Image 1 (cartoon, helix red, strand yellow):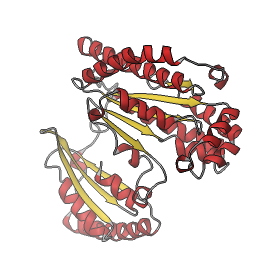
Image 2 (spheres, rainbow, N blue to C red):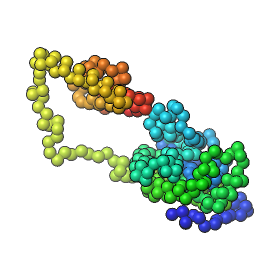
Image 3 (cartoon, rainbow, N blue to C red):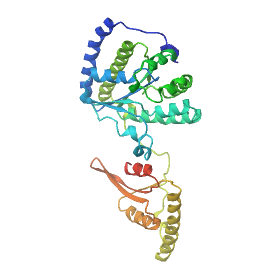
Image 4 (cartoon, one colour):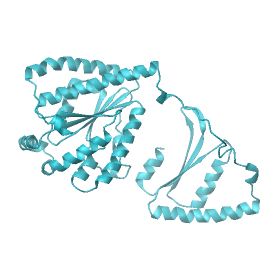
Length: 358
């Protein structure tokens, strides 16, 4: 894979300056056009250590309007981030509609490093890449444009860059990563192959010549922006089948059709007996889940006046666990969309965050 971008490429200063003005003008024009749409752009900057990724980020900020770009560098996780789901630190930085976000480091970084340093297995990496592929598909289906740029260097050029790098810009792990160049190369190639999809493709760029690196990255970004805007304009004129509402036509009777409400009756005495039995059982299970740090989410859905509120109050009383929290979601964009009650036994900060963001 990387052989195709390992060949030496160069561009003279004169040619570089001749191309920059046109590319910069088009980037700005496209960036302003983006503001009038409901599309946002996520730019992932990744690649070999020493490839000048931060310099590329600086170029993007120099050539575009920084009022509509947010830059995010992801280093070591903070205590707050470790207490939450793994993608939370990225999710909260996604740009609003009409704007861009540059991610220096991303949801790929940790998994590639861990595998390259032999802290995980290929099976684990494959599973995580499948999760990432689903995340990126969800983002693109929702109107985000995901542009993934990988900057490549040969091992000789990497060593040369690292030796010539200013000490204050040399991370403590840079030399360690360089020693595992082949391991990183194999792991990165595996990750890229698993996540190089039509909706979020990877673009590999030779970073040995800085001018070639910068202008190529800018041209790729411009092409992807223009393509994304054209696609969205076409969708407005003729919506694709993917975005059309699906009509559900059951082949036969559903579970609701077969539900006999006349049989769902209990006497007052039997009701009290069963309620006491199941509340005690629920209390024991709730504490077991709490002590095992096992999170549970229960969803109550059904017709209005079906007794969902009463049911969840009795479950809450029966659980008797301080880690249990209840919430209600009944309206979507001001319109009634049924009603749902959520009950969760929250055994960790991560699950608490997940519960409150359902």
